[in-house]
Each structure stands twice: as C-alpha cells, then as structure tokens.
Image (cartoon, rainbow, N blue to C red):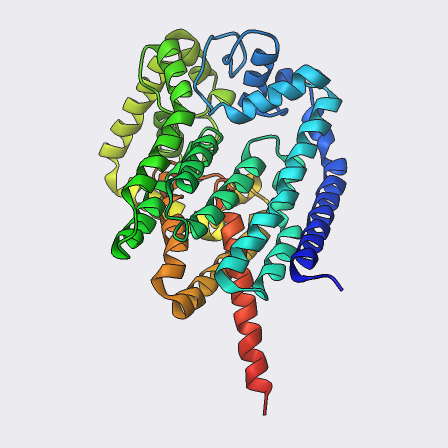
Length: 424
C-alpha cells in the first residue's frame, strides 16, 4: 500500500497529465487562427511577437509594432525572450512555432495544478486540496488562456500561484535564505508581468510584522527579500536607462494604459481606436515622437481628460471594479456586438467570485486573520492598477490559482455542513 506522500505524488501526476491533455486537445482546434498572415501576422502574439521577432533576427529588444522603431520597454522581457527562443528554433511566425509556444502555455497551465493543490492544502486541509486540483483541470479560463493565447498569462498564473504558496509558508521560515528565494522569484515574476509585484510588499510586511510580534528575526529576512528582487530586476532597469536615458523601472506604458481606458468612449472597457495597433494617428505619433515622448504625450492627454471629467472617471473606476469581479460592463447592443460571449461569462465570473469570497469568509472564521489576510491583501492590491487604468478580460487571471483554492475551501465547508445536518 502506498504511503501518503506517494499517493499525493501519484495524484498530482495524474492531475497534471489530465490538465495537459485537455489543454492540448483544445489547442489543436484553435491554433490555426494565429497563422493568419494579415497585418504581417499581427494575430501571432501582437507586440510580444514583434519584439520576439526583433530579438530572433538580431535587432535587439525592440520594434513592437509595424516598422523598425528601435529599442522598446513596452513589455517586460521574460516572455518575449522565451518566444524569441521558440522563433529561433522553429522559425518566425511558423506553424511549428505556434504549436510549440502554445504547447508550452498548456504545460504552464497544467503545472499550475501543483501549487493550487498545495495552496488549498495549506489553507483548508487534505479534503480541499484534491478539489482544488480537479477544479483547476477543468477550469475554463485556464483552458482557454493556455490553449489559445500566445502571451505571458499562463506563465504568470503559474508563477503567481507558486509565489503565493511561498508566502503562505514564509512565516514558518524566519531565516534569511528562504526570503532571499522569495525575493528572487518575485523579481523574476515581475519581469514577466510587473503587476504581480503590487501585493508582494504588503504580503511581506504582513508576515514580517507577525514575526516581529512573535519576537523572531524579521529585519534580515526582509532585507534578504528586498535584495533578491533588486538582484533580478536591476539589469533590466540598467538596460532601460541605457536605451532611453531615463529611469523606466519595468515597462514604459503606464501612461498609455491610462489613455486607453479614460477617454470619451466609455461604452467599452477598452474602446477601439485608441491603441497603436488600431489607430493610424497613434501609430504615426509613436513613430514621429519615439516611445518615451509618445508615452509622455499620452500621459498628458489622459491626465487632462481625467481632471476635466472627474465624475466620469469616478464612475468608470467603479465600473471597472464591477467588471473585474463580475465580467459585467454593459448590455447595450453596441457592446454585445463587440463582446457577444459576455452574458454567459458574467454568470460564470460572478458565481466564481461569490464562491471564492465565501471560501475566504470561511477561512477567516476558522483560521482568523493569520490564515485569511494573505488572500485579502492579494485580492485588494493586485487589481488596483486595473481599476484606475482599464481592464481586459484576462487581466484577473493571475489571481485564479488562489481563488480556485478558496472555491475548493467553500465546497468542502459546504459539504461538511451539509453532511453534519443529515446526521441524526
């Protein structure tokens, strides 16, 4: 008879294989859409594909759009460099490259079963962990993002889940070296998608405060975590300063994101006609001004609009909060013509959020702030920038791993109460 660790390893292997098989099967139907040669293969990863092609062709990290415009800091570097490696092996914008990078995304999505399993195990116990893993296997957002989205999202979801699992264990590891590892991983994740760094300082401060309250070492662990982040991100910061003669910490485009989401067209959460990829005016401005000056211009335009439409900005911010957690933006004909799958998504997204918050409530009741606060911090601070700028339907995905763990906790809690009510 297998012991518990062996059974757990076998279960996790089965979960990963099942999740990978499902994602690869879906991918086999969807990958051809990325091979459309229109607009010089724009549907093959957009800006990421352009930067990856530039790297693969020896032109450096740059040229994110439709011409050779020079160095860029439009995106964080990890995924474009990963895709450039795929291009170098399998060819630029080829069928083989599409299958290779989507297969990697499917693998990232499948491997996320493992940290999701252990997050649920850490927070809710043995009964919740298998629920979390199997929910993730059939989780539609993960299947879609892995099988049909050539972007950093699947990798970020995996890294975010691993980071959060590390956070849950840091309080029991007050020595400096696990915290250094946490900082290194946080820095790498931030170079994949900088928004993931938003909750990390608050999560670290929460745990350090608890260590301080217990009169355990806290300064050396905190300093080690900070050092780890600095070690990883500094080369990218230096590169950006050398390329642009300006301090650009992760990405150049925060001002641009404000501009895209805050304008007179409030019928959509990210209305078309404001992005370089679909606006000839913006494309011409980007070429004429260069990236840094273009971003400064868009920042001024965004601030001017916000300051002259304060009430609209407040209303739009509230709408973005609602959209992040429910998927609802509008039921107007114009909007639904653009987003025809929103009605069923609203139902699923809202139900998923309710179940996750239910699980968070149960965790707070059973474990108190010590158990629930890491989730609270992540759920509050991660989406803040999207409330203020603009959301996309995939922007919340990095939270999905920990939210699936909360849903699993809610399911187990409900089943336990339901079973106890049936007992005589």
